[in-house]
Image (cartoon, rainbow, N blue to C red; front, side, top):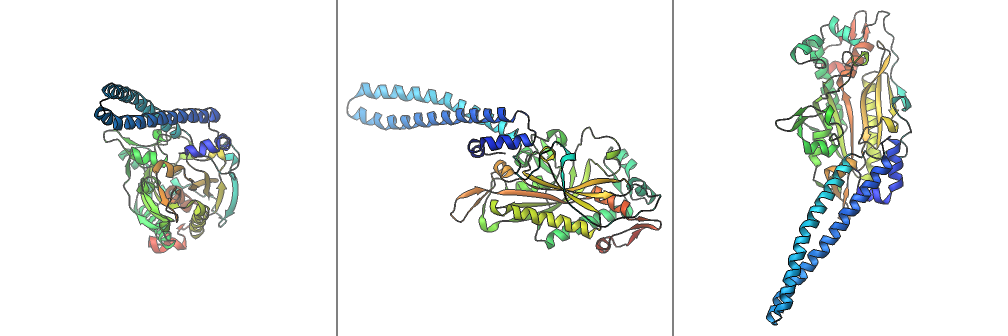
Length: 424
């Protein structure tokens, strides 16, 4: 979340940034934050003043009694009692103001960087780069859901029987391809210096608040109500929360973690052709990259993550493009975000496969994730994360773009992981 210092010292810039994200009533909300914070601060000041007076009077009462000044001592006792009663009221008011302030801050998204383009939605994103191999498909090219049925790779109907729509069952070489991609992505991450983590796939509410999924995405997360636990929408949540309430040493940064997990998203209200097959699922596999870094180095970390994801797509021989997201299409928590999309020749559309984001101090402030600099002062870290990669649409593009009359070709980089060169 935004810091109070950020809001009070750069009020106009914060409001402009929130308006770029199309946050409703930005000016009014920020004014309310400042008002509630002033109330909290003034109440705290009065409470501190009263406590100091109580301590001072308490020290003098004994001395007054020794000097025989009983009336003055009794007056001091009366004043102490009055102050203590008043302090109860002040303490309650301060707690209420602090809670109101915290709840307000939870509703405010991160402020985008200056280089984030203006825009309302996906149509306003800026194409930064395009790459990859051109694909020529047979005239009777099939979409991946037809290919999955033809080669018995994925059974969508069986998933509906076992669980429901959006929970496919991978079979045979389809399952082997999934496992091959997971291992390939993890190996590539380790080669780039990332330490592998195997985290839980359910988290508590504190973890959801820590990375910003709560309260913003509460309706999109699967909630285990009896235990008040949430199924993770991405490994970003448990991995980043490793560093909640932690003070790191500057020498430890940047911290680089990767993790493979299953991910769960309700995706309420998603229907139609754009969600057919693997295009949008409720459960899917993903390898995630997470970095914790110093503010002055986080831009470089972000670029290194972008280069890593681009390298994966190049090795998979897929046509891709990189988008700089506009303010209206960015996530609640991101300050700067780039999306990677691969082109599906059979569907004639771009499929998002990764978002690589810099959150600045937004998550770190929620997490209380700090580092001690060379002067032994503590500062908030920057957090970053990116998919490297999400599997469903990668699988869809691999199946569709590599289909031939003889079968489906496997990219060379994946052959050692699959154990086969083609699906036929």
